[in-house]
Image 1 (cartoon, rainbow, N blue to C red):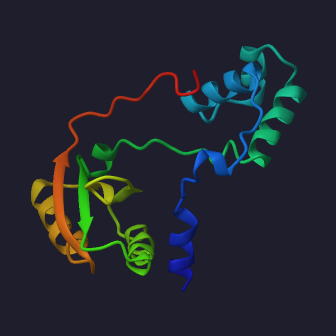
Image 2 (image 1 turned 60 degrees about the horizontal axis):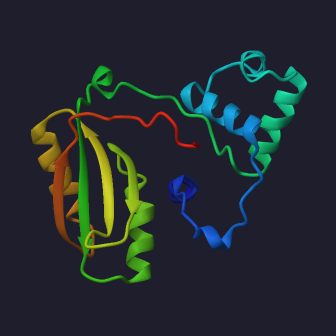
Length: 173
């Protein structure tokens, strides 16, 4: 039960843009968000200095952005090769149908599988894209066969190796 609750807490569902009124974000907020995207550990003093506002103003703005749900967390970026998982892949999964109960079960289950970095419920021919990290090509094969295609409703899997991740510079531009 605790594991299921933890899995649900990790699911971030996208909501159609029309359903949520956008939060007012001005140029100062955008600058703060851009700096935090580049370095989530940047101190309040450094953020304030770079943006050109008082530390108390900066702190208040960051707090407001968190309260409004614009900032949803700060995350560490881990070199997966350094921890013995140098192989990354994106696995495209198709399901036999679109039964909500099956989709909900899959969401809860996939979030608890060790080696899953993220899963994306997508539109089109593919139902889910699952980003995984493993130690070897043999582990990748076993992961797909034992952990993903064995899930009820999965009828097809297509695996693509990730050679390189190229992060976008400006997501708020």
